[in-house]
Image (tube, helix red, strand yellow):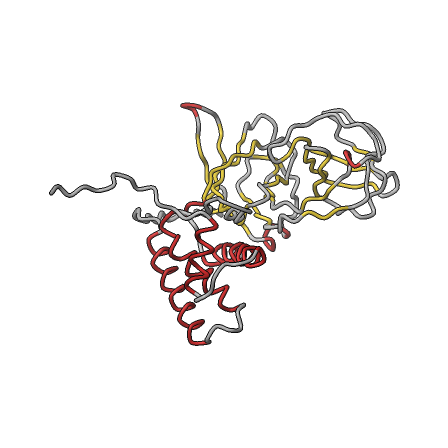
Length: 314
């Protein structure tokens, strides 16, 4: 008799199977639509908790932002948790050079006397906004072209002094507001990967303005003309939502045991009929499975520390 393996390595759990497995570990059965909805809600909370536990390497992505002369603030993708590494890139192709840019705190950035000084950016403050979207009954008061940098709206009362607005599919950053004329001033068009476009003044829902609280960066000095700078970053993004049906979750297969164990623990906390000792066991198993997965999901390259020499002259 010849031993033969399957020849495949594709095992995964779609969301239905994952939830059913978690219910069975609690000694329960998945019976109703509400059981599915409450499990899906717990699953989304579980992935949010994972974002607080450390760096999930499979959610690290590279991104680039072309720096614009005179623009200080630049939005990041709305699902950004934090930036891990950053450089300023000059040139292109074989002439490309990546130069370190130092991360500073909000307190340090606030003490910079002249934030409009120009040059090659050497410092960056990462403003970790929530990514939530607030709304306001604000409409375009006058049509705009794709290049207009002053935008007239029905009211600026509910708008932040500096921030972002979204008109149709375009995100626009504005640096100032004029309360007397209801205008947004010094606007930078087509932000966050969107495209600058013309928009027609109307009070229809099509031009309803939303104010995304986007995570963003503030660079210093302000990019000077002719610099051709690109801000290159490696970001930690949110884990994607659980979904509504037969889908697999946004995790490597290595984390399946931890996700099932974590969901079982979450569900057990919400079920009064489960013995407290079993809840404690499920919690202990979850922590064990998380430790196993997270210890494997780490950088395995050696770390190199390079001292920076500082010279002072009188």
